[in-house]
Structures are given as C-alpha cells and as structure tokens.
Image (cartoon, rainbow, N blue to C red; front, side, top):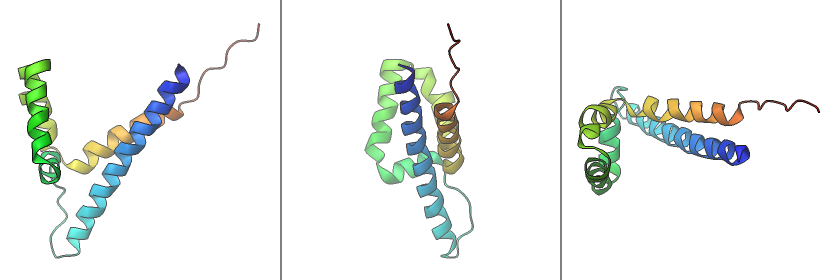
Length: 107
C-alpha cells in the first residue's frame, strides 16, 4: 500500500512539475516578444485553455462540496501566479514520494 502511495505522489508531482515548466516556458517565450515577465494568474491560464471546465469546476465545488469553499479559498488560489502554484505542490509531492522509508526492525 505504501508503494502505491509513493508512486501516486511521484506521478502527480511530476505532472504538476511538467505543467509548471510548460507554463514557465510559455511565459518566457512571451518575454521574447517584447512583453515583460509577469506570470499570468492561474485562473487566466485555465480560462485560456478551457473556459467550460473552469465553469464546471466552480459548479461542482459550489454544489457538491460547499459554496463557501469556492469564493475565499479557490478563487484566491486562481488569482495567484500560475508557475509557483503548479511547481510548489509538484516539488512537495515528488519529495514526499522520494522520502526514504523506515527500515523495519530485525526480529
């Protein structure tokens, strides 16, 4: 069971890191076009990729989880810069997946 958890952490962390690097690459390529480096907000990136899924996520959170969860928590997260929001959890999950396991005591 511990192996599955570690593998899950590594896989999800790698996906978050990959998404962070893709967004970082996009932002740096925009800098070459004469624009300043200002990371886009996570919500703006998500809206540019697929606005319908952003609306669907809001409806699911408000209807099935809790309406208060969307406005102060998730909306604040959507206003943050996209690269750190994607990269920091990715690094933490990869580190959690690579954390050395405890050795069992010899009997």
